[in-house]
Length: 124
Image (cartoon, rainbow, N blue to C red; front, side, top):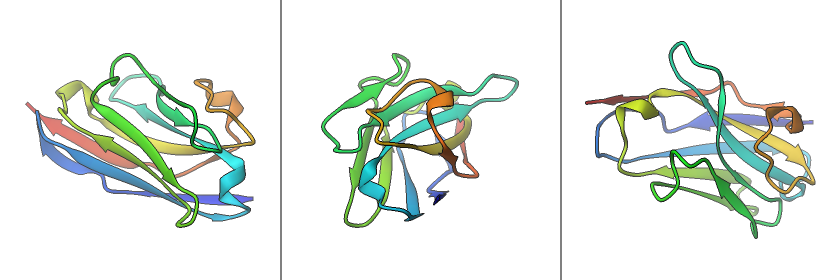
């Protein structure tokens, strides 16, 4: 079992930056691939970024590639999402998720554990 708690969301202007963090507790964090997903108003939840359990592999949705960076710290048991050049369409609730021994899938169904989410609102 692993518990995930997101933080760092808030209100930001278009073009600005935010840094989301996800703190994990429970089983050995380094055995989990971590992903970030988001759900905007009246939208389905969608993949944003993922990082393998080792940190060697990262993947990004086309909509955020070049603007967002995912990273992890297996000592502090955290995964971060640095979001730059924010756009109004980035407005969503952002969730982190954990997948035991994963490589960082884009599929929600691969992730066993989810956080409660943190709201990001980008004003234009």
